[in-house]
Length: 557
Image 1 (tube, rainbow, N blue to C red):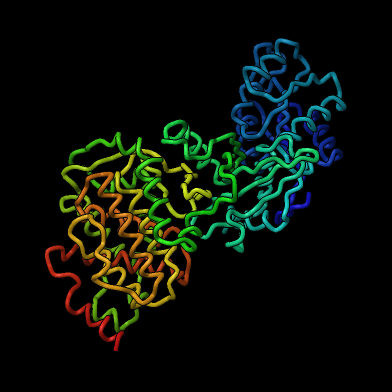
Image 2: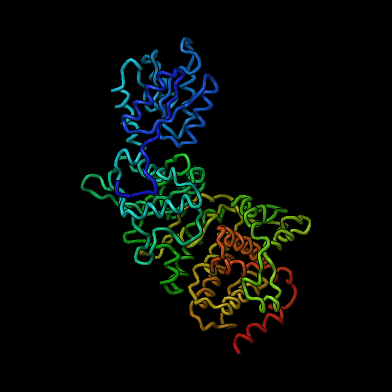
């Protein structure tokens, strides 16, 4: 196997049998055949429970399960068959000294076993069945070749970051399941001329998206997109794709889900590729294209591709924006943010500047003004529009084709949410990550003041301030486009509502990874969030505060 993970293991085979002598015999066979035997211990119910524990603990790819685990002489004992489903995602071969054609049929069709072997048929038949089943789920068994070799280590480092890499072979096994006929896979970067790594720069904890070519014989198939993530996230992604995406986007500008597979920790989903030429993520498109093409691309996505969902928006009375965003992200985003509660804002903007503007800790502000003060919750609204939103709309989940059309991928968080959510999420990404300006505090500070000063959702008046840094100016123009589209599509003009969504996303983005020291993107996100908090606290007062203007003057001088 060309692609070397940190540790490539032989297949792990769980042995579940109530006869100790049979267990010893099977263990010796597994060792002789080059597999790693995992033995379930105990009797009766304790044997069954130990089997489930061992399968999970050792991430077994396959199990050999005796049909009668409770009583060998009870003709009605089907405890081994009942165990098959509970051992998944490990596949099972059911064995029995008492089986017949009817039992074999029940094992395969009703219980979901992969094979049935009568014990009287001997080790040779068992080995044949074992190898046949493992070829469908185990990359090392089928000698799957994945190139370039370094990509699997990059993926492994992302998927198992901070964890034991003992069972990182699950990543290659998922690729083996997704491409059952392939012996060679070639992985290519999206927008390969612009990235040095196969892994996206967006914070995507323990998930990656790859462009994969499958070779069958002498033929290389057209590429597909593969998302690898935690198994529970892939289950959720597949479910949400079926409910909210399949045949529901105007013009069908989305990749089609072709297949999915899950191991114990890792899952994967295949999406069809699109476009006649190499597509690139919006994050790269934003950097290389002019504002006119960016406008055209965003307008098509929001007013055409996703338009069917916006047309079905519905009103909810007396709702909390915080609760709505938690429905999309889960409450763990806030719980994770609390680890940043004691953040020293002077470390973000400098001690002297902090003394001038008295920057608020946005996580402390969120805790005191929203989460723990429901009677004065800044996010409580008399009415809120909800619609099906993408839920994770950043620049690496939009792929732009040769016609400047955006295709969306990654539907793990897709579902009903705040109708403005996709607008504020993409705007946040533009400001914090896609903005390619030189790291200049004063320019970014002025950008934050400029985009938070309005009282209604509206296009930004660019003539009020012109940045010498053209990348900052471009980011400002893109924000203006996002605001115009939000107003046009939702008819919402309440800028406080928009800012609160932008605040939530900035905190979410800043705290999604526990990087220390903080990255530049995290510093930007927290600074923007702090300024939004101050704006919300001083809504009816001149903006920006007079003392804040001194920073710009001092910088200029």
